[in-house]
Image (cartoon, rainbow, N blue to C red; front, side, top):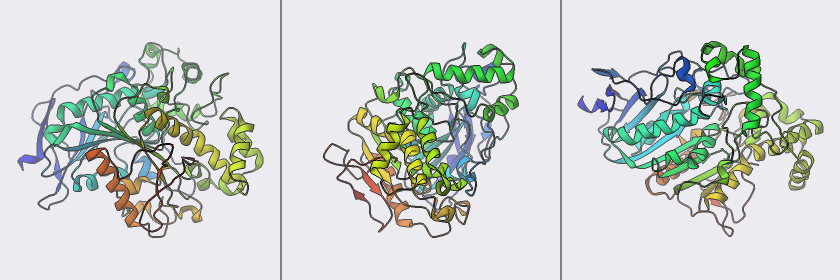
Length: 485
């Protein structure tokens, strides 16, 4: 049918109908927004894609950015989050688009996936956009360069190439989304984890000004960037392991396979400096590289929805058995990556005098990785709508709780995805509260439409909004709380 062929600025694409009702959903997969990053182009700014003739099928998933396997989560199956891994092919700077059949200047939401800057793709099962299209939103998910190609700081190459890809995708949306039924003047950029931290950095990127009207930061950080000095350590280590000079010209000759293989070889680097802690707490040597943290501003004058999960750190401990077997020594070792470890431990123990070692360790991880940076970014913005997700997943024998990533099935309204259920699933064996998915997904939709998710911006007198699923109703705390811890 004619509405399944859409003409973009580089050529026509053919989509499919995924819901055959009168108000059904159109889906377009692997639509290019930038040229394939090959050879030296892997370390260059994104370039426009060459036009094509005829109609390009957008019916099947496309390639993903080169990436290593991410299966080190013990008892937890994270495949719905990370997706299928590296699907080979140069043409991976693409978007997926879900649009209502009758879309006409509908709100647009653009999602940036997480994965520690080294993994993830639009192919992840969690990121199906049918629920957004069902509710009148045009949803765009995007791939961006990862690992060495996306974030290694190299002389002779622009920094933060993965972030530049996100900005290029926003430009593509500005120039093409009307053809899919979207409103280029009402775009909400949102992301989770590494994707959320990228969104926070886009808020502080002048080149992105005017490309979006609203932003949602889910479990990200406004304090998550490495300094050039820290990034330089990673660059030198990568060059030494690859046996090449630490320059973009030298790295251009290294094949993708070797660039992927070196990523896990760089784990364990001490990235603390005299004036900077490791913002990623040793979890990844790749990330944004900035002289100033995004929370130091200035920030774009857009609507902001921002928050964290109540037990973020549990993801990094519970599936591996570390939540129950952590020792006092483990607590102090974790805090040491943050800088002033003794002070950090004392502060968290004072807040939780009866907590075990694993719980304190999880709180330290959550606050250092997400909580502190979320609070700083919200404060820098000044009128953000702040939330905390508190529903406790019964996965991992009831230990996972309100961990990092657990909110995503509720935001995307994907509770029925089979791979999320059962003993190894993110949502666990019990039935998750459908009312909480309805509530949280509706809040994201409302924010994209109007900038109001259903509760006022946080102030000194008014605290964050809480999603807990206890009774199907949310609550508003009168206290500022400890987001992310």
